[in-house]
Image (cartoon, rainbow, N blue to C red; front, side, top):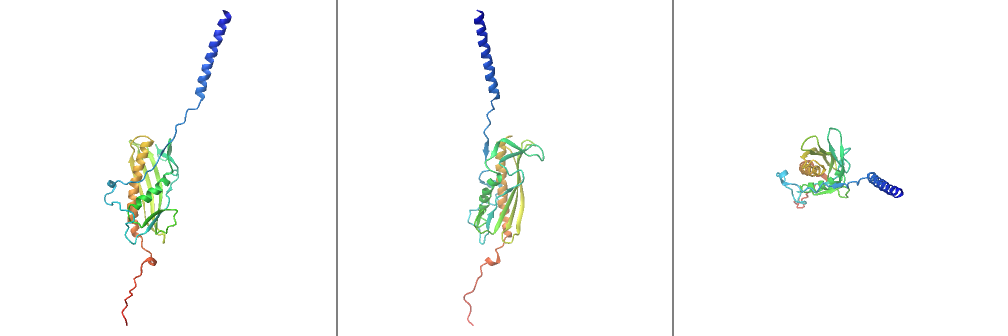
Length: 238
């Protein structure tokens, strides 16, 4: 009886130890890392309600002579040249959402949106993105000053600031420059709510950029060497 009791106690102790070791191994196993979510700045389909004074015109309807516009890829200020989605809770401190990112840097996503939006104005003979072999008359340079989700109030808000220069590509004269700043309330207090607000802020700024390019391009003048010379072939006989 004594031997049987000892065997049972040993088996019970071994089973308990095995359970403890199994639980310990489970605790030491690293937790599964959440998969990141990726977001885009979408194609700018402008809402007519943003500015009904300047309806979009079909590409290729520019009056003659009209300049050709080349769009340089946008630059981004320090800290805003990353795919990470930025938020702030206090001044001068940038933070990043842990598992939410842009599919590309905002600057690279913005470039084709600028081309599509400005092209809709019908102001230019053509709008092309560099690098391009096309000869151009005017150049558009842009810089993302900030694109951030601010949580210093409720509701939180996304702020997008873009600086733009329109330059005569022949004379290097600045035809106009402007800084656009748009703030949009987030639809929810998380990364996705900020992404929705960011898209709305970007579309609003792009609409303003389109109007700016139309206005500033009026300062452009066709080079004298390109002005057609009219010759009267029916000269009177002397």
